[in-house]
Length: 253
Image 1 (cartoon, one colour):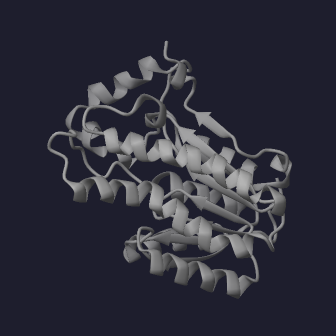
Image 2 (image 1 turned 30 degrees about the vertical axis):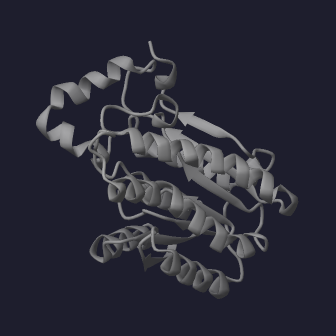
């Protein structure tokens, strides 16, 4: 897979799946723009990419801040004259709250983290994606988009359902420009996203593999490989799709 000459932005790329996606894109020849909010972690992530011989830079900004997103993505687009791939990886649970006790502030913060961020970044990148080669947007949704998540994760599920739908809407909107828009839906991936239960109930965490058809938890590399494929010209006829990366977890066993 040759991604030489491509410019890719990966949000939330200072750890976990996002960092592995950035590494994979870099290994295949992309110039990778890392985003995050923790500049110390950003510097470490950038060092990891440069150590592997990749061309990369780090932009620290909050993906829920409309003005910051627009400013940084415009700067990137102007510097390189194009953007070939936008990977909207940033997101998260944002905490847990049942609806009866849920504050409006919490409701809006989870939507902002998972859905507003996709809108802000995509809108800002579109003028530069139009100048890219096999340009693409890749969003991250979740099984929670279909099953609404566990107790207290209802807003996470709701926001990820929005990501599933905005992926299709963007694909329709941008097809005339040759811009493809897809989503990936990781299952249970062994990252710090699950650090709470891993540290307090490791036996429960391990037992989750019993509900996965392939009998194991996912690795960040499992997701990164699919994202790299979607960025490549080999995926030039794939758009408006959501690819499940969960070892069959979505079907249950």
